[in-house]
Length: 269
Image (cartoon, rainbow, N blue to C red):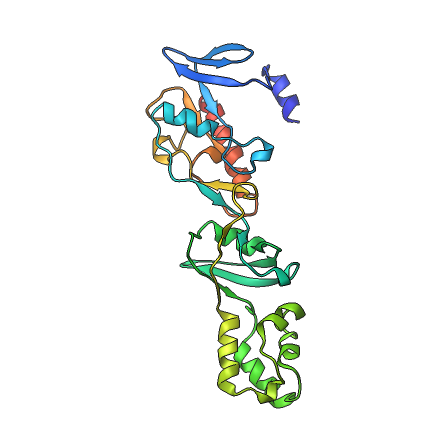
């Protein structure tokens, strides 16, 4: 459909051109290994640093810097976080992952390398190295009340068996102490419940740009017109999509930003 629309308005599509420089005097000059091009406007639409195996590079940022545009700090976002919990790989459950004022109720997945799933990808955009993430493993339950009730009604049941009523069995076995629930004091059950409702984990890192769905940071939005995506300092230069310091949540927001900012620049260029 995109190619059909391009053909309908006479777009000249060129691929496999290695660009060596983008310069401007009266007009823009784009030098490539397959010839040079001139234009009144240039739109930088080459994305961010995420998933380099698909061709992601710093091209848009490098060109923007050469034209004097500011670039904010960049780091991987919507990315799995690394943590040493290999015995739980494959376990998933719905949680609330929180960091500061940000929190997301989504699924979380344990992997061989750490934590993933929508809840972790979402909170990763707010995480910095060394910070702890607080995870409510039982968002629909009063864990303390449940454990105390089971102590009265099923005193001979293994604590991990009782806990497995609320969460995956392997995770329950990992988190619960040995012994039957009737042997545990109420205050010990309260402490366990508190840990389940506010499980604190400090990731060792993230899986980086190779697995990040988006790049956090990029060309400073203050350098661009919010109406046209044009660079304020360089008439005719436009920057759109993930190259810009705009990052959305999961759910299509980043696609929408790419398409909408591209449409705005196309209308103005």
